[in-house]
Image (tube, rainbow, N blue to C red; front, side, top):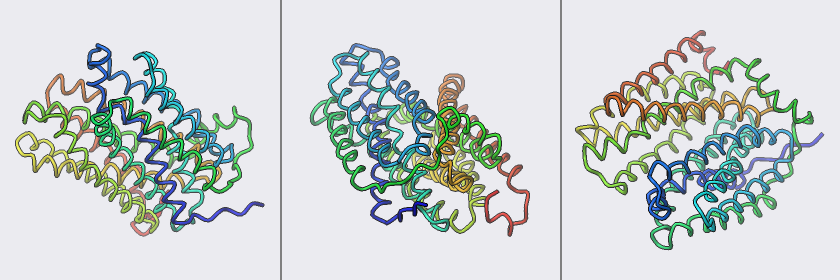
Length: 397
């Protein structure tokens, strides 16, 4: 019988850094799309295809790679995924054509799911009373990675060209891959089934675990709200205020508030309040849309709306994960695949529906769509989780 390694503060910080570095690989390209469109003589829509294929690669990685965290020794798996991401980023930096850039972008999307191996690993190593805080800490690193990736990319591209962004990111991931092998402790696999059984068991988890079904539905709808807002936000700010892309990007920095939400949600989950706190975070998201609507005429209202929507979405996300990771200690990587695949699909649907809504009715239509989905989340939460007295609701179920 192997004893479980201790989750030290240093190891938790190391995992948070890796989570941020790996997920950043998906976002470096976003500020570069106009630059790439000019260099390769493409339309903005065609250049934007890079983001789409990377996201599809990431979904593939969630389904194909993340479950292996239950089946393989985690240190080796993390070392391999980090190293392959480093190779993919270097190839993007050296890509001779846009087609090759697309191909390498897909490969990076598939392998940069390192973060989604680290999050369940933190849950696995943490004690029961610290699990929510551990998940929140690693997710804080992930949120910082998303936040800083665009800033890092813009600065590097301005200083040394767009290729330098991917080459520098490749070096950072290569260093992290080596550090993984030296720092991550040896952790025996929790599953010894065949690969076929491993992947089929994800569907069985959905069948057998009502909490996973509920939390995946709420999470997917919340990420749809995220996609609805961020997809059309720039259109409104350009039309109403004539903002440049650089100034619009500053609103993304307000997203740092989500890191605060991650820590709060994790601590509330550890104290057994994940059910009630989920409802509070969902209602925070609902309340944001009134301010975002008035954001057409007031930038202060808009900024406050951004703070609330980010707090609500990230807080609900951490609450969801904390509840999901309590279900089956032997299957946390597969639980991650089930939950995050649902989350991701929701985001894709939200982005697509937002573009349609804006085209049909401008920002008011986007607000109605986002508010409607937000209210639906609250209704689902109330119908499925407000079934017990408050004293019994403190803990998930």
